[in-house]
Length: 394
Image (cartoon, rainbow, N blue to C red; front, side, top):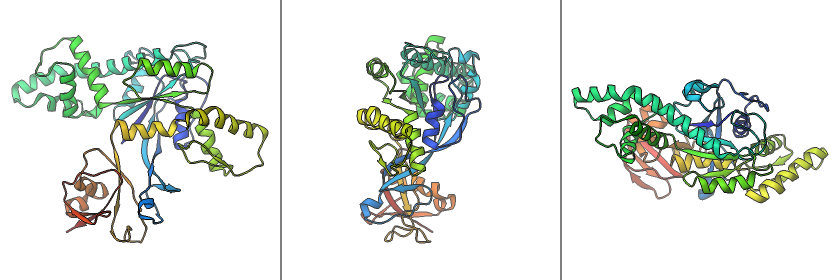
């Protein structure tokens, strides 16, 4: 799973990325700070099943804090987008190519309107423009790719009599497109069964395909600045199809770094923090109090963790499963309790989980045990969020 962090240049994408990963990335108040894409690991949060079984877990591929399990997910922060990117303006072509394998997007938006369309400092800019131009650029990117392949697939399927949506999906596999995505987009664009279509219909189909295959959430960043709250409320009404989360990446980054240094105790995504060191500079104390009063008390979080969780669980409908080797002790062969937590796609089965753990386990799958009910289940069992399973092999 790969989450793409996108947006125009100089809106706080790199700060957003660093807040999620604590990675060492360049952050500056100037356009095109990010040239090469930044890869990193963020962590979605979920209630750990250790609380259900009243055991102390010992995670291996994730970590647990006070009954909250943090499970890794790959993030990609790419170069900023400008209008005309699909025509090569700015770093556009590279930006778009970097996003091919992303499963969904988090669009980091300067909700305060203090950066213009090219990322330069200004006042009174309307953030609605950024949503519209970003959608437009990605739609045209999809359209250009689809158009290059459409006629070729039409000719191929006329000769082979293969299913059109499968052949087109295969040609678009570099974008992570599935045949079900193609079929649904054709239905939504009202071109199902039509092979000969004009550019207008093809663009509509491409836009539908983008929305289906690359769903998006909007991170309304810089919510603490003047005018941001008003813009946020206006944009929520203008774009009801999107989940729009009020965010402050700088606040989240400050809290995570203070927690890492032992100044405060802060669990990402929570509505408050605990001060551990009373001795701090006046500036540090003022900054923490500002975050508490102006962000946490108003919005209940900085919004950063919510964006990542929403992308994984709401846009992609993923789930977390905890495999164990001992169904009674809930441990692996070394005695580690609830060692692993795996992110799985929606509609995944027990067999899919077995292959996720190891190819040999998948090939030799016999059955599984639901550790909550002790019920035996088969390979076609559909996984549920927070399942705890023991897998038996030959």
